[in-house]
Length: 153
Image (cartoon, rainbow, N blue to C red; front, top):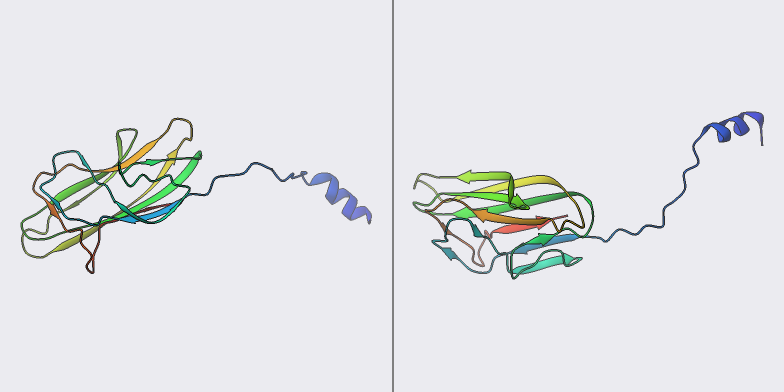
């Protein structure tokens, strides 16, 4: 080993690989039915999980429980038609972290997307859910060209 390499080796930090395993998580789900006149603060449940690696998303309750501490990315798509409007909120431990609103004014059918990057902790059982907070809404969730979607990773 040359003198230069010895100096370089002495100056560089010794990086040790960690044996800690991280539980992989990813999901993609959509709703298989229409939601007619949901109540205020109605939790949207995406009941058909196409992908649910790690089983962190619950298709019965519509809630996501983070298995690992860290950053998560969530995206959702909501479609409406006619004289409808809506606001959807992404909640973490019952606190709003992001909201999207759509009111096409009875002119056109509409679709809106929301995306949020959220920092959650493992042991606090951080619950993530989408909730409707507008009253006048009929959501289109059928097996057609457009679905309500929720995905996370």
